[in-house]
Length: 294
Image (tube, rainbow, N blue to C red; front, side, top):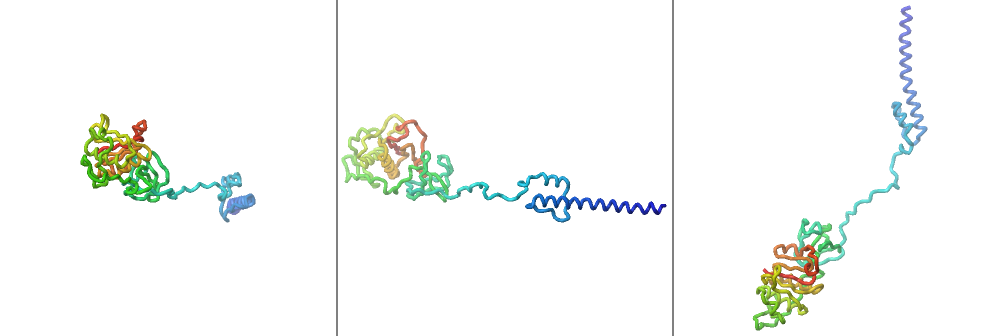
């Protein structure tokens, strides 16, 4: 009888081992067959790979459309950012050294400087006294009032020469400006400094169409007789401003103010800079050109 007991143990053990090995193989075969039959587009499990019961459940419950890989060609795509440089609308001349700014504001950082009498490509965009230009294939900004269709030497009006000396000692100056007395100019010259008288006579001879001036009085830079107002607006005022700027060294000018912009010798490299709004055409210098001599 002991032998019988011993002979039953290996038989039972082998039977259990066979049952344990056979069960997973049957499960893999059934699941693989079911998945392949239910979803022909999905790759079947590799031979010999076991799929657990939770994985079987997730595969069975997952909608077929969520198991399909790939992206539709009709899906909307995000457009690429346009990296093309700004378009040049036309080219203008710089009438002074101009700082090239990153933004159209006085405090903006400058990246370089345009030389005087340089042709500059502009886009046509203007903001607060600044014009958008194209520099190094990027949009930059310069003071708009210092851009012109013509060169400085071409746009500055030729002053009328006096033709010789006058009773007051005025002669044609070496710079080409006239020192001849102006008609009825004695009232304006009263109280002006000699350097201011020189500017007054040169302008009145170069622009006989001017008829009104402001000389020495009790306000601002006019107090000491160093400033003059040339009463002009529109294109005439622009031409007077250009003439004064073209002769700024000969006239030893400290500043020029016109059309809400200002040039000063202390910041001459910046050209004409924008000014704050002072509330009226006269206060903003739209109806006259103001200068002060050193």
